[in-house]
Image (cartoon, rainbow, N blue to C red; front, side, top):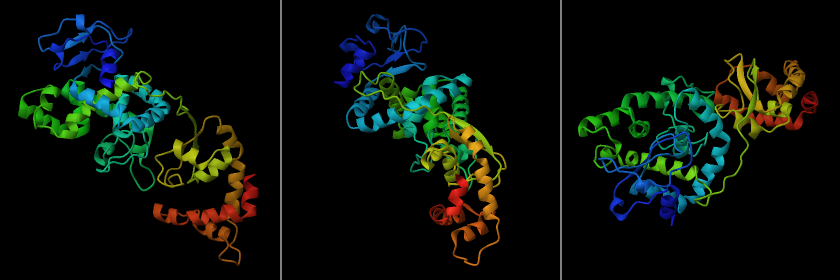
Length: 367
């Protein structure tokens, strides 16, 4: 069923003699998909070409791509729908970054097959974030990873790094299928496979044992994801409109609790974590004096207006400790202005909860 839809979608009128060839759809910025692929002449390699397409990167339709389309439409349907739902909030801003780097916008779907656009995704190999960067590669492109932040989780910073990485891979291999394969397997592995097989065509490499099974399926999986994502309704998926990833920014001069910021902006702690996924705990890094913190769109003025409340809270923390050493305000005043490790900060999170729940003076200061 899904294969039939696929052929209808891409306008393929191939006869049975083309059953084992691969149809290559060239990128175009204009017009809908041509519906006369069967009428186009095949080149010497047996590829059939369309004059127009809706893809930025040449698409290949072969047995492997069809298998992935079938999978996403059946056993992987729930998962793929979740990817589509999550993608709506990130795709516009990620495409903008790719355009700024003169890269095809369709590369945004690499993040779909890597993580389903999840900022919290962690692979078995400890690759992290929507673009699934390994630690070494991330640091190569300037992403910070320390006890306080992991910028691989940030959808904007990681996309900028991914754009630079993909451009470098394409410059090296000269073709997007090989560049994408090296994004998955590593530049060195693909380069060795090219030398070993004397072939610079991904599909030729795929037919050899020179690359791993995961890499062999990576490019077909990517192409299948693009075909479905760009024609979601035709494949029976719903195109839900998610809230775009938009925000205000404010520079905070000291380590700041996201829970307090949420109260000052009238939002929730979950909202703050979603906007600032790079933060590993509730607190901004204490060593960064002007940390750019994201706020829900339209709440910057409210945050600035309530800065007096935060100042009042800090004054309360600096008061001499009362006789009752178990008082949460007393205990918190002893640790707030120290630069503790992330583990220590997490250990005192429960103490902060007690403070918020039991200190009337604290709550009054926030109003």
